Image (cartoon, rainbow, N blue to C red):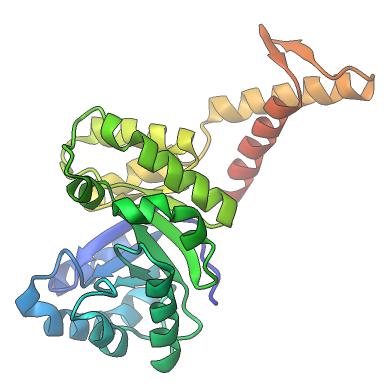
Length: 283
């Protein structure tokens, strides 16, 4: 299956809006999505498929990673989406509301039958069952990435979305942990109010702290925030470099723990510092 590049920002555009899709390469996102699911009304699914297949190649030609979000496996549109909306230039296929191994097997077979066996699936974990079974689901061989969808999850739970995110903290943590164990990148929930840059910034910081690699974006203004949030700051990099220098010097002298700038540092904190340096090098 195709290897994905970095995924700090994943920008969605409705498949029924060619004017939005053609501008995607200019938005600066690590990857873009032509959305045949939530952003496409039921009476426009055929038009959405046509647009996705027709426009994805030109977007990909710009060097941007392009994906198509199909409708859920259980929906009446899934099979037609796989047959008619995909193209060779895609980096992956996004499948929403994944919550059973059987659904992923169905994706696997559908992609093979349609001639797209080289495309991996980014699985949307956005139901109660999907979160509960996230660890085995994300270990499926067809899965190359995941995202957590808060709105659908809370709707399924019968809960209420709040500004504090307390109602999704456990679910976000479970999905991030499951992705880490599966070795796949995972993207955090959307911020529906695209004018609220402060909330997007705060949620991005929380998501990075939980282990997410990036964030879903529904508006171009969110892209730069995500791209910045999921790489270490200059201050973080500098501190990590100083910490590793001090720690490695002490380790060579047989000292396993040191006092560094008022903090006790041992191997777990050195591991975190190395991770910061690695992220900086990748960026």
